[in-house]
Length: 120
Image (cartoon, rainbow, N blue to C red; front, side, top):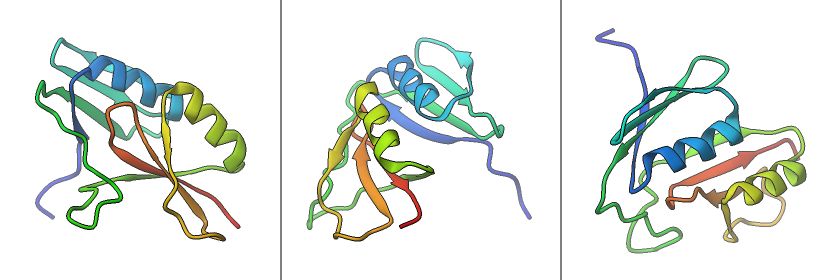
């Protein structure tokens, strides 16, 4: 082993706003907060970081000419309740999921994709 994963880092035009979204979605706390760098530690200790990128352009998904680059899978017990809460926080749903799937795809307020994953 060479090292351990410390954080997953996302570019954002508004790092603090995006960190607030993820704290409300996953729980946890903001543990670092500067103008251009904000870190969230969720309850298990995993870290998401958000760095200022004024030129950030969200990935286009679905887009046959490109990819979503990276996404997070979030386990939920009640997907309908989780979806309603995520939408209230500012997420948007991507309606490109086959019927009967065990996941639903969303964009966070900066356009990064994530999935709510559940048992069918």
